[in-house]
Image 1 (cartoon, one colour):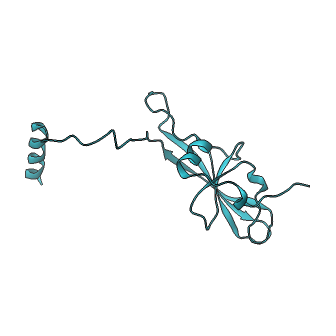
Image 2 (tube, one colour):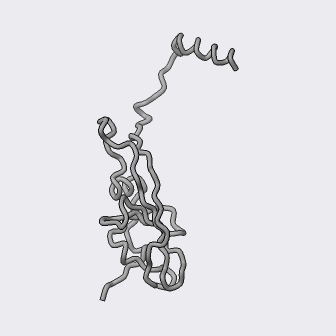
Image 3 (cartoon, helix red, strand yellow):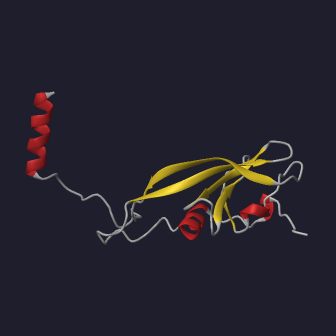
Length: 139
């Protein structure tokens, strides 16, 4: 007999740690050969018994071979689920399945530390002042 686990029994993680751990969406973009976009599969998980939406699954490939990000319909945070096929409906306890699988393209942006990237104090350069004057005169 296979023990089914409810989606609320998985340990929720914080948003930045969850996405980087499950989907590895934060590569080092300093190298030119690294992809700047990634295809992500989003699947609606529904109950087979009552038809209610059990949540949304996010994965790098479909069908997923590793952990996924799962978000219940009433929850704000996502959690990592390793055995997504064991998810059950939170209302009736029925089995779940993926209903609608769509693909999305996600831009991979490097993390910006705003404490280090501060605006420069002082006057703007002369070339920028003249460019702004030309743009105002043309408008």
